[in-house]
Amino acid sequence: MTDLVLPGLPFPLQPSGNPACQAVVSDGVLALTSGAKSDLFIDPAGEEGGRPDAGRLTGLPGDRDFTLAVRVSVRFGNVFDAGVLLLYQSERRWAKLCYELSPQRRPTVVTVVTRGTSDDGNSFETAGAPVWLRITRYGRAWAFHSSEDGTWWRLVRYFTLGEASGARVGFLAQSPTGPGCTAVFDSITYSPGAPADLRDGT
Image (cartoon, rainbow, N blue to C red; front, side, top):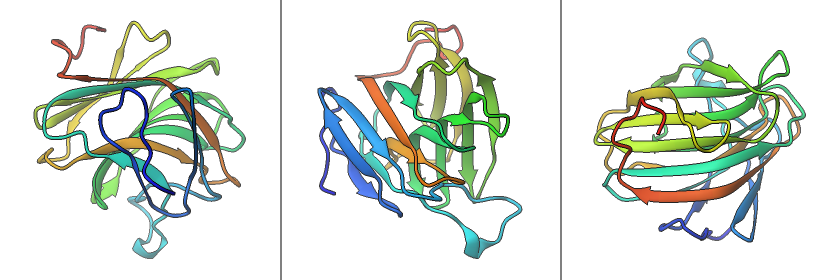
């Protein structure tokens, strides 16, 4: 797969990871299909040799604050299928903001932050409609937000991975227990800077 350019996104996206994902762009909409048994997760109780991987598309937004937002819909089939906004610093420092099918088969906003090993936290369930996901760089810190209407934003994670310089951001589809998953990302918007208040819903 060659680099992808999305309208409104001021940096190209490069593919990486295995199994490779399949990407289709049409009218500014990105449809991303994962491979089978694909996941990006370093289980704190797992074995190092069993670490999974997943194809992804990421790019370099530069070393200034920014906000990237997108609406995500997922063709859920198997538990843990997800469409993801990804922040990737290195193979042991990265974070995911996911719209994911829970073990209870409920569409759920989930966050994962990896510093050597991964944590995993469910934020809230939805009725299955598309959701908006947003990642913000705020100095050396990062904020994950989600919204059910694209207007009022709920802060679901505020964290740091250490030095933010050189961080890549982009998109991932995963299917840890299934044969593959398609996530559709539309209404993609990028803006320089961060919200004045990360906690007031703007």
